[in-house]
Length: 198
Image (cartoon, rainbow, N blue to C red; front, top):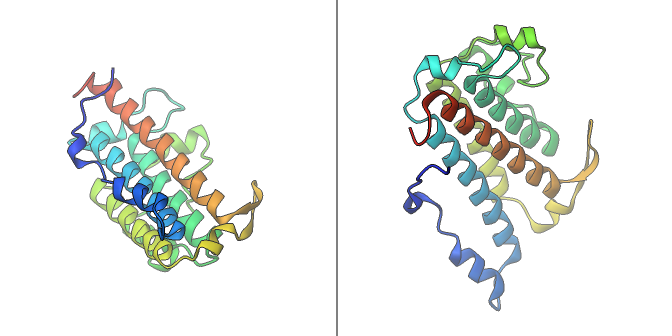
């Protein structure tokens, strides 16, 4: 069954939606706000799912080839950093430019993806405050870029390994869906450990 969420903390987007349909409303602003709101929704879902978890719970894995919550959190931040900074903008990831790999005590080449079972088992989960600090730094860069985008930039085509030619808008959509899927995994792993609504 669904966890009882406090919907008062959910973003209020009615005004944005109304603005889209009214004369003089800016579609560009609505698109940027929509992406921002969805990124914020995923962040809130993730924060609810990790609230109050112990380090043991963050490191726990339900099986030898399964990810921990800590590894999934790391993967979420690395993915957004790679997608928005490197793939969309063609800039260095802050993982390297701000030396977050040193702060999290992980290899500079760690992409947070495509691990073997052995790598999953040996992943040293960083402290939660450090993981969240990296994720927040990545999100700040994402929102700064988003704020300055023009409508035309969402239609720009970029070439992405494993994806081929895609638009910037499609990459944002994929990023949101991917982050949301992992937020669901984190919520599930919390529930497996704690039971319903705990």
